[in-house]
Image (cartoon, rainbow, N blue to C red):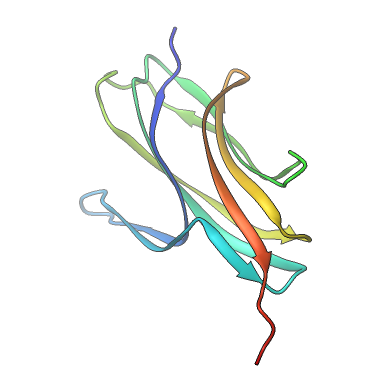
Length: 128
């Protein structure tokens, strides 16, 4: 069985999902941050999939520059029409960021990487 296709993978300060129609509003989408290090980072991951043939067990993870998993875990996507668009949100709370570098969001399935998004984290500029 082929793995799902990741159409979107984004990091944001917050994702709000409407209870009435299921739409998601993303606030503070980012791909690079300047932070006073070390720090704790809380954010959301928004993803959109298609091509789900049966139940799919995905891993949604946040990795440091040395490929160590800092946050995340398994996500079960229930069986749907393979042509359906499936959206999901994962919350990452109080992730410790110790050093600058290229961090990554990753979605994998059965050991295969389906999508990655780099998140560049650098030190905050000096106050001045």
